[in-house]
Length: 85
Image (tube, rainbow, N blue to C red; front, top):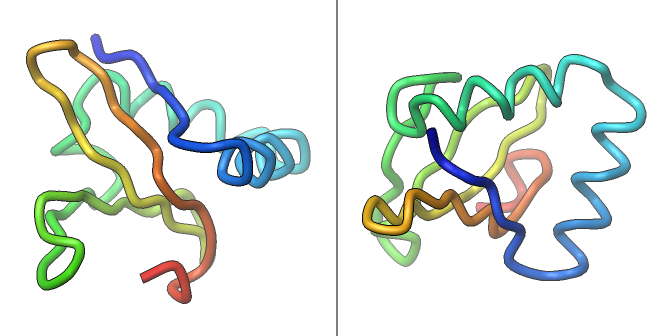
């Protein structure tokens, strides 16, 4: 299982607000910890975001994250609508 880290305070605040307002987000993040490449329609990004991943947290909500397989961590770098790309 992977551990989720947040890249910065702004992203942490946004994610916390979503978790408080929607019960399903925590469950989806728990699923992501089990398989960061195969859950929630996860897919690798391209172009300037190459090396990072994105997945769906519901309705219009996405996260951008990177994966460190050695440390077993997922680093969430951005949360929001498709505008985060």
